[in-house]
Length: 207
Image 1 (tube, rainbow, N blue to C red):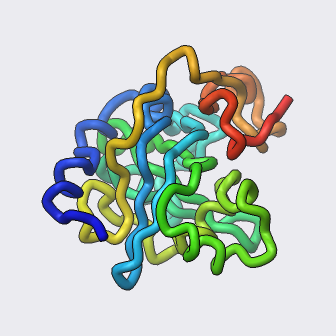
Image 2: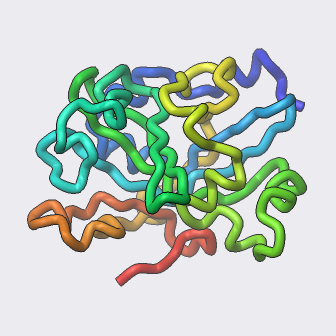
């Protein structure tokens, strides 16, 4: 069980997110993503992220402006932006930066920590090191979908939040181009805005 008072002290405040999205993406490494449904807690350490930097970033959804899909990105920092992709997967992002700037961090992978039995039931037939090593995998494991789109991640009332986790040394962090944006023109395609913890088995390797 989680200690409610202690939990409130650990949850990242809005000002953590109300900064440059690239810095937020890097600083989220080592933080703990927590999901509570029906008083069952699942958590994992964030070990891979990607930054998407507003309307000028041609790899960012916000490049098309404010739509029904992207509206959350234009709102306050610290909200969840959850979108559907490839007609089958949900991806979980964290809104960052000033309101109306429309930047977000994609959470690409976590290292499962608590609620392993719950994750195992949600990922049947999948090896443990494959449970949450991808953005669509972690949303399946943590039961994140359209119902979480727009929720406030700075309070436990939403059932989904991010809290202080473990310290990650700068020397243990690497960066490189974002994944799956091959058709995006330069310089956006090669921006080194994917961050990951080195030697972490829950992070996929990309060339």
